[in-house]
Length: 277
Length: 278
Image (tube, rainbow over all chains, first blue to last red; front, side):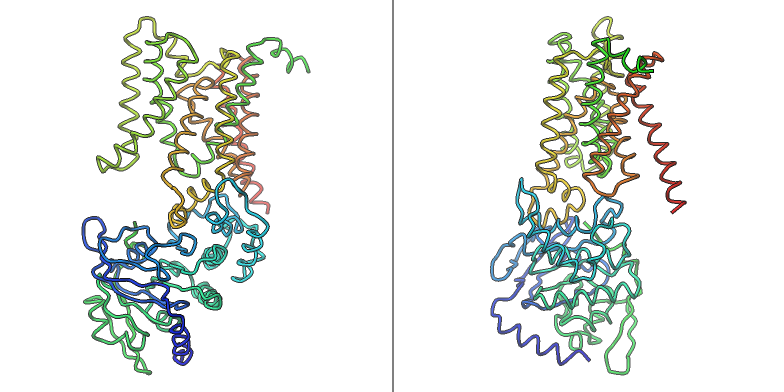
């Protein structure tokens, strides 16, 4: 399947000595209880990682901690070797429910928002900024929609606007919280095609996901998370029966498919009820 | 026919009232775009009411000096907007509940203070319902000055305020000072409200903040065009309302708000028709 290309890419990534992201014994408290316990992991530059786990496992909390939106109780996070974020280098795509889609902004307005930090106070977007925004839209296949109001787009197109915004921001690390929730299959495919574009740009991607098959199919490595990090490896190694039971506990339906890969249906809960800040 | 339009302009108080309506309409409509987009309508209404104790204290200390009353009112509005945040965080209650508590307490305090002054009924109604025809030249200068400050701040911080309003999470990851911009918006809102009190009064301020932007939102999908259109609609409502007030002897603030509401209803019906035909 995807295996050969995956291993080649990891070899390439290992040449680049400094990892994109390195978590050292990270513990995070959310509303007084421990949401994440002692997470350690290293993610290489350009790698695309899926975070999977049941509702309440701390997927959103982990992304928010990495984005600096949620304080870390103990441990350290290193970004490209530095122990603090360079603000413009990290892009965070929020859950769809958190966006007001009737807001009076056009697609290009939203993409240009990614440049706000680089433009600086009291300045207007330059031609360079507009060019970057336009090019970012072209790369996710939305150039023709630049002047539409964001509410007029389909769910998949809306999500790609945010990917374009991350490109325009020239972010090196992209965090996405359940980007596929509420999208139909063609729209989900659009997102995965856009992820290929991000790979060409060398952007490191961390995505919270619900679907284990998609995690296995489209991502270099998967994190199995349930308050602690249960496994962090390519899907083929990570998705063992023991790891899946440790992650999902009772909410689990194991099915053995032909190629020996276990598939799982998470029987629990509506993803939109996932814990959000 | 021309006489109908020019006759009221023979009166200096009508000239001043018209200028005040144009200025206040513009400032409130532009700030009101944020009120509509951020869902702050209740806060806007509450802030307008919390100004009352400021005006009452100002009245007790400085008498009817309008300039002094303006500062007292502005102080009360800013203190209320800050204390709402503090109460909400400290008492761990929802923000709208905190707004309710602060708003009711401040308004009651205002009524209590005013009730200690004899013959207060007339003055109180001025603040509750405004008196745009009583605007002095001094008032006009003050409205123009503060209106300019508000508009200038919005132009200068336009893109930051847009990000903070549309996607606070992006603002936080870009390390924009989100709280500072939220505070700036509260202060701009407080200034717009104090400016509006003069023309439409405490009770109707919310309408000049919310109705023109809501009308503009029916027709535009860019924030800056929503601001410009809201300002134009507010100015039109101000002028038409004042003429209606002159010819039909209606209270000026109420006339402006009713014209503005009528424009919203027509615009809404028009946009429905447009959508059905397209």
